[in-house]
Image (cartoon, rainbow, N blue to C red; front, side):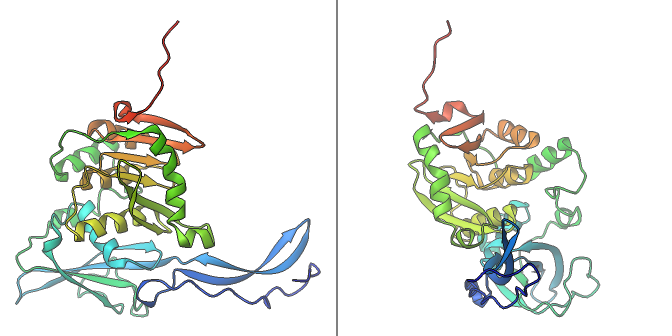
Length: 319
């Protein structure tokens, strides 16, 4: 493509086709831009990761007296929305079993009567998923009303976060997962290979489940790191595969409290991340005996808890 002068119009570049997503919703969006090299702009086409709101609504109660509540709106990349909703409800302690869900509906925007705190406008078709619960399911309204303690901006202290997590987490069993250092070092490339939209846009977080031998069993990607994990764990929740005590959770970015608490709820025994952990994430790992490995790059990594679960390490004797 010919170079343009600095005042040239850059809107004529032919956009790239979007990557189709689940249920007809695109996960990428084409854009035209000016790419500057040594102060010279050039017309170019690119793909961006789509970021759109998803409202999660909950329909619950007796068959003749159903209640409808809008519980949250999250910014996400379209696709696997039902898994995202299920994973969110599971990891927040609202649901305990996939059988509690009768089904899902994708609806046009409309606030439930008297409940417009989270609701999207009626001009947001396809960005609302309604989770239909079985009539006998008791919804923990206190859990819903506290606006979900895992929200990183909620302002509650770390001590309160841990106490809340302990109140809803499943019973822990001994951590019997052992993984070789060689296997751990292979995980980032395997995760990257499972991210088609990241390969096109560079704009998504990834999460994947691996066996102790380093075989990938499932991966998801999203513009939000917590959404990628919810999609991943929501899939396993709906498949009745939790707890995941024999699986590694691999993350493409940093590790926050909310990601560790999702691992706790799913029974994950080891979390591995490319980025840094927060102080509260490390405390959760130690309190709930989850092996936590972070800063994994170029065959180097830090073990913040669970060194005994990493095999194949070489030890040096003190002088």
